Image (cartoon, rainbow, N blue to C red; front, side, top):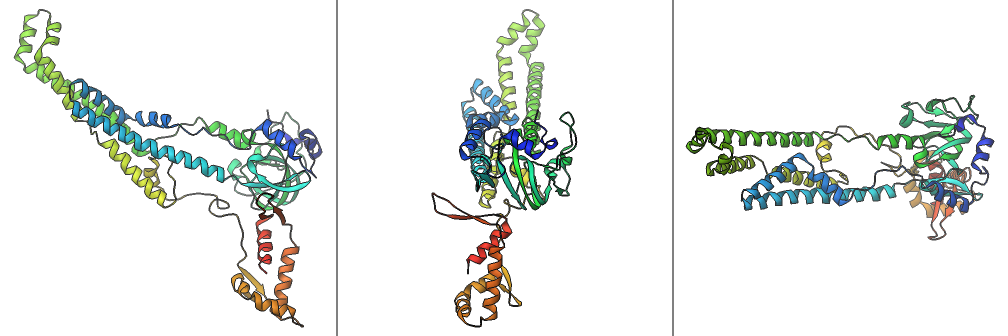
Length: 443
């Protein structure tokens, strides 16, 4: 059972997790815990192998009907029909496997790129690390716009509000606090009432805070939900459902055709009537009868002819072409049948920050010397502004711009992080504040 951290004081939580809120974990300890607890990510079913996807393709009702038709055609000597049907089945399978396997690989790569970074205290310094590398005991710094990277107990809050709709369904942001909740370990507090906790998948909408990580990956509340969803069976699309019904109906129709043709042939054949009339070893003589054998082959041929061999391949080709068109518009289709259901979509609900946008604020307009000017226009005026700054008294525009940008850069909690390998400088902090530092650097 997960420890109920919300009942405990912050110093008790920190002692249990063996961490220091001022310095955080040392890098070596963080690496040791990462090896112990594993990466901070939700485990999904692994990428399907081409063989697994092939088996799924061949388990389709229509494809099974075609395979049976190919076997029967070969049995009755229709070699040409057998080759054609097998070729269609192979083409259909290759198209489906190729498309779905490529999509699976592409989505796996995209997920690696989509892992967010998070600010933590490690070894006494603020660092920006991948959310996958978080471990229990890490001290995480939170600001408006951040996604909670793991479950944690809040240590400091400054007007912190968190939107927890993904877990609780409540659309209103929850105002957080540090004080422990009254109760004991035997009690269970509803998720939405744990005001001193932070949970993976929720979003900081206002204020700032500091939290110590208490659970990562599949041990989080979101991980528990993901674990329950692993075994949920995916429903078929309307097209898949119709094709399955068609395949089953065709199988019954084929059986009816065989029965009707066979019955008509038996009742109209004089040779068969003579065998029935003799009453001597009727069953054995019927099996050896040339007429009965011809009737059987004719009935089987008519049943096979009733199967639309090209239909599965035509559907797969149409969906594959649709998938390619979608890819040209930067929409990656994971499963071919999704092309059909996507045609019925009217509304798409999506996160904005970091999904539809880059989570990077940009200053576009400044109010300087009593008038609004675009940053682009001011950047073009840099030489003029620089000369004006050297004059005494200073020109109003240069003076106002200098005061504005100096205040934007200094009244700011943004920190600079220099990558030792690439030498690249990254700004770490609130997106709005980093935007102000960035625009100040333009001048």
